[in-house]
Length: 272
Length: 272
Image (cartoon, rainbow over all chains, first blue to last red; front, side, top):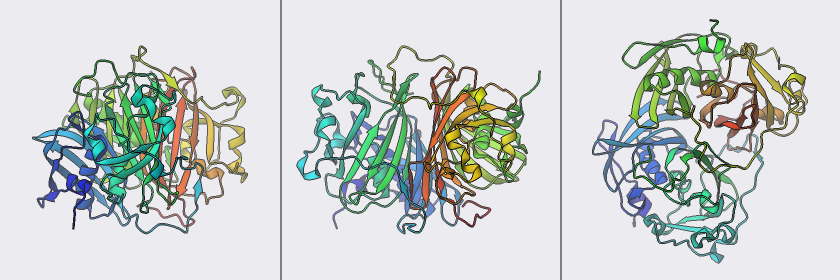
C-alpha cells in the first residue's frame, strides 16, 4: 500500500508514556516555517491516538515559535475521558523548544446524529467545477506541491497584483496525491489557503497566527472540498479569519477561526 | 471602596506556586451550575495574574463537568512569556475534580495600535436606546440578578413562547451594579445571553457547551455594550454560536464562538 504524503507527514510513534515521536517534514512549509494547520494536524494525530478516539471535534492551537523541518515530539495528556468525548492537551516540541500548545476534544463522528434538529443558514460557496479550474502555483511556498488548491477566478488574481478588494478567498481543496480528506486533514485544510487579507490593500507578508480553532462538524464524503475564508474585522493590530468547509455532497464539514497579527512591512522571523 | 459583585466572584489568592484559591460564588448559575463565561473569567483572572499581563487576548475553555458553588482552585502554567504576549494554561478544580481546562494568550490591550490598517466589514446591531428597554427577568436563572441584559424587542418574546424564527439574539449588556466592563468581564459577556437557538423551534433546555473561545479585540470605553449572538449551523448533534460585542463608541471589542450540543428533550445533569 502506498502511504500518502499527509500520512507520512503526520506519522507518530508512541513511547508508552504519553510522548509521541514524529517529524516536521520538509515540503509543508512557507519559507522554511511549517504551516500552522499541518502542525495542528501532527499534534492532533498524537492526541487522538493517546485518547483512543477517532476524530478531532474541536481543537485549538496557540502558536509559540516557528517550526523548521526536523524531529519533533508531542507530549500529550488526557484531561478527561468521557463516554462521548475525550479532552486532551498536546505540546509539540523540537529540541526541547515548544512550537505549539494544543487543547482539543475528540470523539467519533463517523455515525452521524441524523435524528436531531438541522438548520443550515448559509450555503456553500458557488465555484466553477473543480475540473474547470487550474491548481494554484504561486511558486513561493513548498506546501503548494502537496496540495491541489483551486481558487475561484474572481479571488485568484492577487498573485498578479490584482486584488479583488474584499478579504475573501473561495476555492476547492484536494490533496495533490489524491488522499481522501478525513477529519484530521480538515485541520490542515482550515489553514491551507493564502490569507484572505491578501485580496485587500494590505502589505502581503508573514501573517503570524496567534491562535487557530477548528470545529469538525462531520466526516467528509469523498471528493474535493468547497472552502470559503473571510476576514471581517481588522482592528487594533489584529484580524480574525473565519473558514467554512463543505464536502462534495454540499454538507458543512468544518468551521474555523483564527486570530492573527496584521502584516507589517518589516516581517520579523519570530511572531511573538 | 465598594467591591463589585463581579470582582468578588472572580477574586483569587495566589499560593506562590502557580495555584490560586477562589470560590465559585452562588448567584452566577443556571439551575445550580455556574455560567460558563463566569468560570472562564474566574480561571482567566488567575492566569493573567500568574502571567503578569493585563488582559486576555484569546482564551479557549473546554467544559468538563458542571461547577456548583463552593471553593475552587485554579492551577496555572505559563507556557511561554514573550515580549508582547504570554501563553498560559489554567485548570479550574473543585475538590480535585476538574471543571474546565483553559488555554489563553494574554497581553496589554490598553494602548490601541492605531497606526495599522483598519477594516470593519460589519456594523454593530441596531438597538433601541438602552434606557428605552427593560431588563430581562425570566426569573429562572440566578445570574440574571447580577446582569442588566436588555434584549431587542423583536428577539425577546421567546420567554412568552413567541419565537422570532431566527436563531439570533441582539441586546445590551451591562452589570446590574454598574461595574465598568473590562476585558476580563468580556469573557462573561460572551456567554451571558440566553442561547440564540431559543428563538427557533428547538426544545429549550440545558445546552451543554463543549468549547468556548473569546477574542478580546479592544478595551471597551465606559457604557453598556451592544451584543449580537447568532447560530448558523445546527447539524450532526452540534451547533455553533457566534458572538460580536461592540462598545458604546461603536467599536468591536470582542468576538466569540462556542460549540455546543443540540438540546435534547431529556436533559441530563452531566454534559459529557
